[in-house]
Picture 1 (cartoon, rainbow, N blue to C red):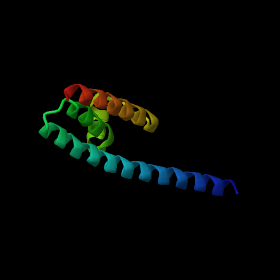
Picture 2: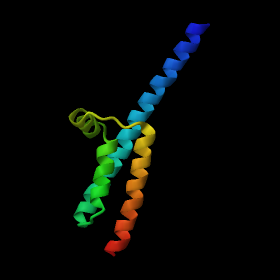
Picture 3: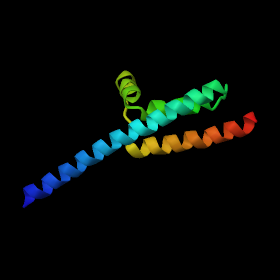
Picture 4: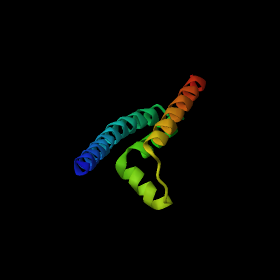
Length: 96
């Protein structure tokens, strides 16, 4: 009985890891495309979108994680991205 509980817990953890990886790729590609559009418009908010890309896109995040020896939890990534997007809205309001 105890083995079944442990097995179901590890399956749930594996499911969450795969889902997190897929969501990181989806949002990372979205932010990368948006960064390109912001750079074309010569917008300062492209910096914030680039930072969102670096946090979410797995190859860039893994490189930064190895280079600077740090990790961000999932919730911390969400909070940082939300803060960067709010900051980007303020930048866009001042550029107009």
